[in-house]
Image 1 (cartoon, helix red, strand yellow):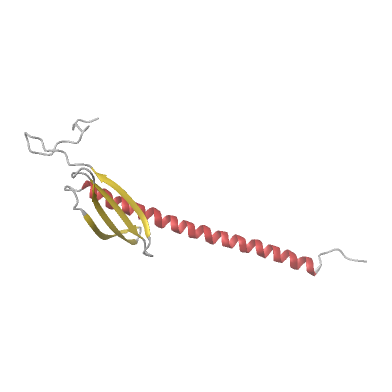
Image 2 (cartoon, one colour):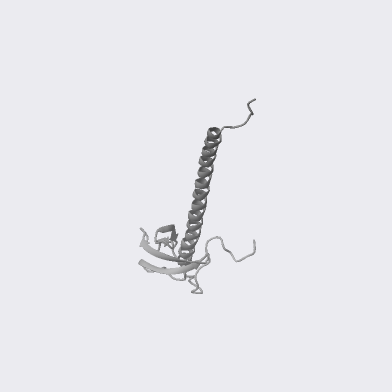
Length: 139
């Protein structure tokens, strides 16, 4: 009488198929982890670029035309940034472009902002005029 069960060949084929499925899942997991790491780096680099550009826009004086650079620490990492200040058709308006390099040295984030002209001083007080829409009264 023959007993029912799996032959050695059937078991080996099943193990081969199972191992291929496991290898595919491991590769998928490593690709997902790598993608999350790249996304994290890009998000923080974009944040650093926007911060540097916003500081340039909100400075008391219009930034000097040309390029400058520096290092910011954000998210526990050091980010090297380069800022370019370029003229536009109006000499009082400048375009500010910031690029941020990640720890590997690649450009990981960018931001571009335009600095509007400074408001003309009030002829009576000599103080800078309030921005349009800001009356000083509570809303």
